[in-house]
Length: 268
Image 1 (cartoon, one colour):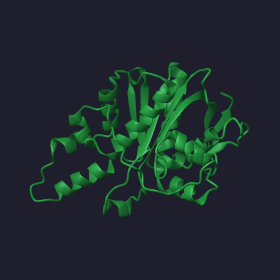
Image 2 (cartoon, helix red, strand yellow):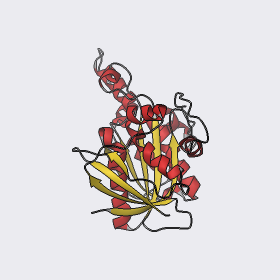
Image 3 (tube, helix red, strand yellow):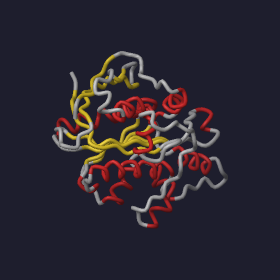
Image 4 (cartoon, helix red, strand yellow):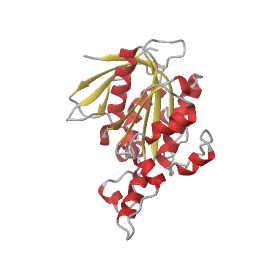
């Protein structure tokens, strides 16, 4: 069984590129990839009090999501969303563990507030005024594929657009040694149940047992393999190269329980 939806727009931020146009140029081979630490984006859509509270995970998630919707010229408050990451806000988790290991063991209300896994979707609601349903998932290394399948199913069944936002940020030490994530990365895709004049491509998703698709460029493969959210890069590359490579090979993304999510690209 497969699910077919349409990709309308993309937003992305990560090491070496700050938005989708920059990633697209790299993935097309128009610009050489230069590895660099992910920037800490300025988030102007939140009130000042909330801006002071949010961490890197929330910032990159919201920035990528807003980029996708801006490219599609869609009001963020009208959008159903699916958020997914490998394990949530690692920095906030570290600070809570640090507080619990101290003498007074007191956790600040802000830390506790940001510890819930759906914190990014909550801040999204504050920033956009969105009142529609939002789903928050956790997929470890398979976060992008888990989120994409969930968003595609919702889009297909509910017959309405869905914004997928997948993000990851590293843990500080000592947690980083146990769960290494190389840098921050976020990617968002706006999906629709039907084609529109601005559709980038159709994607047909289904579950299979197959090896994950990798990147030919070794530097980009290092990004893909070292940041769970960056498992999206093979799909991002195929979308970036359209329509020149309209007959792209199937893409296989790491899923759970030994399975892969197969993605077949078609005309938008």
